[in-house]
Image (cartoon, rainbow, N blue to C red):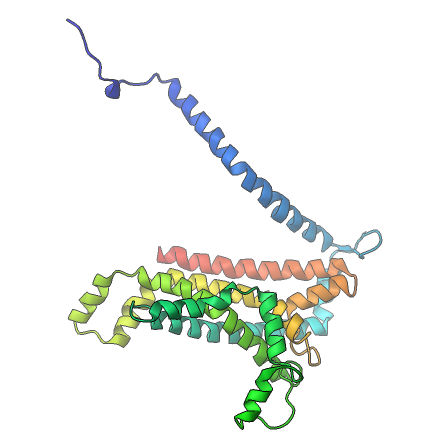
Length: 308
């Protein structure tokens, strides 16, 4: 009698399985090696260097000297640093509230397909394609009291009388100019993320709520917001992180003025490093700011895990 063995039911030799697993591991390691090299060279190594520099008096020209922990202790006596920290916190709160409200409103506005909705989505997202430095220069030209059209348009409408300097006239107008730039530049980008979260909610859930007689506000509060919690956490994380690291809009628009009223933490780091030529103090401030950002992201990830 001849025994026929189906190739599909044939059992491979026991020694072949560990060898196959080891091969797969090596192949996976080879695929991950370029990314690991890039992360190590351009993130981990610079991060370690910054931490090392923060423990030294490190002039731009000259030999570094160990002075730990003077760079960290000196931050407590730096009045400009305290002013910049308070301003950055205030700016973060204002931008996060306004940008989130505007982005969420735009996402709800273009949520459902219809005539002209695609055009609106494109129009809202177009500013995100402009580089942030280019957008800052664009706003600097628009708000210029010499060549900008904003003052002339407001004067022709009777809304403005006399000379107004939007970027350096007063702390309020300088902050408002930077906030307006950020809203114009990033509202469409965050709208796209929120729109993706809105469209991921099953339509059947809304239909069931409608059959149960739920109002629009109840549907939004009980269905839309809870189901979009991961998306909302992502958007808020991006907004807060970007606000705490604000630099371009203030460096180009206001130069930190008037009277250092719009000086951000990153501008302090820049001044310490490249104007005062004290890389050690700049590195210490960078490390503290990094710790704050990491703690915030850990809290956000903890919220997402509890939700999961």
